[in-house]
Image (tube, rainbow, N blue to C red; front, side, top):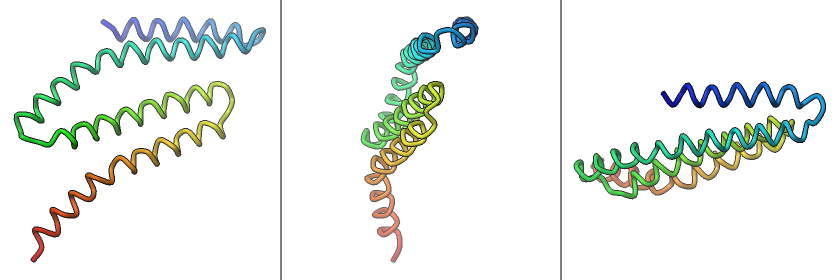
Amino acid sequence: MEIIQIVGLGIIATVIAVILRQQKPEIALQISIVTGLIIFLFVVSKLKYVIGVMSNLANRLDIEFMYLSTILKVIGIAYIAEFGAQVSRDAGEEAIASKIELAGKVLIIVLSVPILMALLELILKILP
């Protein structure tokens, strides 16, 4: 079970970081970042299956690939922004973390504009 490995890695890294934070806070931060990256990369590799299933479903339902790719980009931006914000918070930089979150939200809105425009065009076609 992969979750046991992930949680085990997280707990071990947390204990090491807490112990080192008192004497070497910069090393504790590095351990936190590296552990987060390892967990992130492990989980991202599992997403290939989900993307494949969603692509197959989109092809079978004859959904434009633009919509699927936009949804996947939005999800990716959300996860990456959250990860970056948490790393900044771990380093004690709340202001930077909130700016990362703001940037993620703005990028999500920008990516969503084509879908919103297509939805509005569809609504206008339906209305008399």
